[in-house]
Length: 56
Image 1 (cartoon, rainbow, N blue to C red):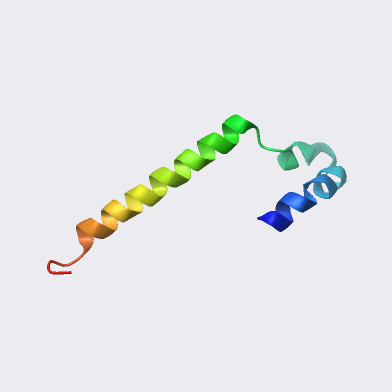
Image 2 (tube, rainbow, N blue to C red):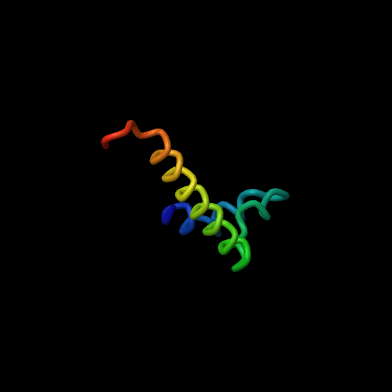
């Protein structure tokens, strides 16, 4: 991830019309992504606990 973030400027410069794909995410986008990741982790933990055999 760190390598990708470091290369964003170079990627955007060489992308032409697609340069917007390499732009910096807004604070709202970063917040939304963190929330999505949190919900994913919580959901996976709930599923893991629900499907774990009894006695473990």
